[in-house]
Amino acid sequence: MSIRTTQLCKTYNQDTDFPVHAVKALDLNIEQGEFVAVMGPSGSGKTTLLNMIGGIDEPTSGKVVIDGNDICELSDKNLIAFRRDNIGFIFQDYSLLPVLTALENVEFVMQLQGHSEAECRVRATELLNRVGLGDHLHKVPSKLSGGQQQRVAVARALAPRPRFVMADEPTANLDAANTSELLDIMQQLNENEGTTFIFSTHDPRVIKRARRVIVFEDGQLTEDRVR
Ligand code: ADP
Ligand code: ADP
Image (cartoon, rainbow, N blue to C red; front, top):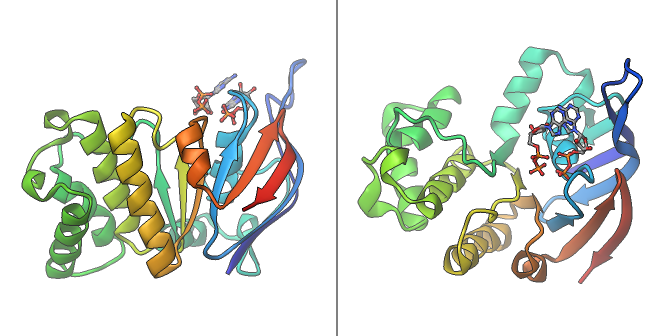
């Protein structure tokens, strides 16, 4: 249950005079249960890396092997199913569906997995309670604060019981108290359920809590330390 990249590359604008080498020949191994921060300056390739190992962005060359399977070899249909069942995403802008309530946003991703309505209701309610939104189940995102929306996004990412969660700057729009709470939730899940977390961040408060810190510069890994 690991993620392994070999010689992973992403080049944007490849067929132009100004190709951008966002990720360069990266070899990286992340084991199930790790709690990893990816840090580095803006534009260093963190988002591109997370998107490739999460199967939402296609590498230019190289491999992403998850549990022994090269995800780039999967058909579109199988990749979508693999992602849905194994990988949770938390985006910086939350990406909640604006017309659905907090509860419906979380239920929706479970419905896609084929769970019954009753099951979805129970688990979504439980998760939203756990992230402190028990009193806001029926509000649409625009009626929630940024921190509350972020917590809905976290509950949604966790609802399908993914084995890996990718989070791109998850605390970028959160104040200190919300940052600390979000980290507590992530850490608890990591410790109790063995969920792997891989998150990009600039935030020293977040880096301090990571057990492994990967430093990315100009598309390359320049430091990899485990605490
Ligand atoms: P980070 O997350 O560290 O800020 P990104 O992965 O977003 O880095 O970007 C890495 C590099 O790739 C940057 O130079 C960025 O401008 C470029 N880039 C990212 N996405 C695209 C895209 N869709 N098209 C062209 N260039 C891109
Ligand atoms: P972050 O710093 O969080 O990675 P960015 O602001 O760099 O976010 O990028 C936001 C979005 O813009 C991403 O979807 C990325 O793919 C896209 N993007 C970034 N740089 C470029 C670029 N040079 N050309 C086209 N799209 C880009």
